Image (cartoon, rainbow, N blue to C red):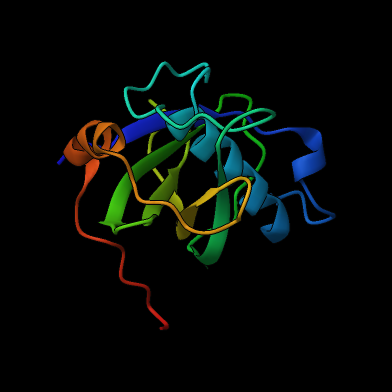
Length: 154
């Protein structure tokens, strides 16, 4: 089992009036981890960062669905959260990115805060039609495929 670990720092604006990470802000933190892991030029240097999107790119990525399960309140941490990521499903034009968000690396006890999954569809920029996952993308992502998450409530 190979998982990516992406360190995602918290910002004051991620907190709500109860002094924990707001549930809606969690999607932004997952997005930041996903971009670092799958898009070229990320600071993580992940071997999975093979997607090229943005101005002038031929492809775009679309979010087809997201599911999240909150396990514990996330207080503010000075150190970045440890986001473990893997690919739960790799289809013809889509992939499911799975996440487990933990307390900062090295912090004891290690606390699981969030489990989540995002389904991403790769699409042609011009037409918006789904495009096939390339052989290079499959090769880069293959070592990170493992069982998808099962959520408590389906």
